[in-house]
Image 1 (cartoon, rainbow, N blue to C red):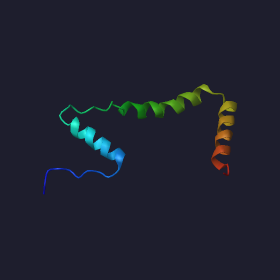
Image 2 (tube, rainbow, N blue to C red):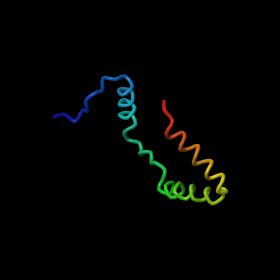
Image 3 (cartoon, helix red, strand yellow):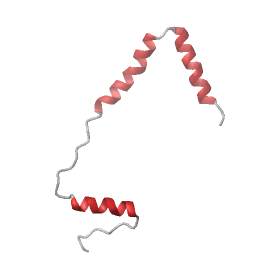
Image 4 (cartoon, rainbow, N blue to C red):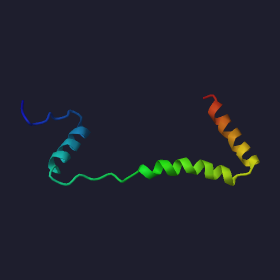
Length: 72
């Protein structure tokens, strides 16, 4: 087998393939650390519920239930 990868037929995939080949020697782009986002999202709902009055929470729950059961 050869070390040459197969060229994609789709024009967009081919363009990405060419760019990847041209920039092969550069350092890879590191993704930002998103591990803390999950914890923040889990805290947000509880914090908001503490700030709302029982009437406001009930109204928000009714709106959410109506949206959930709404027929298309």
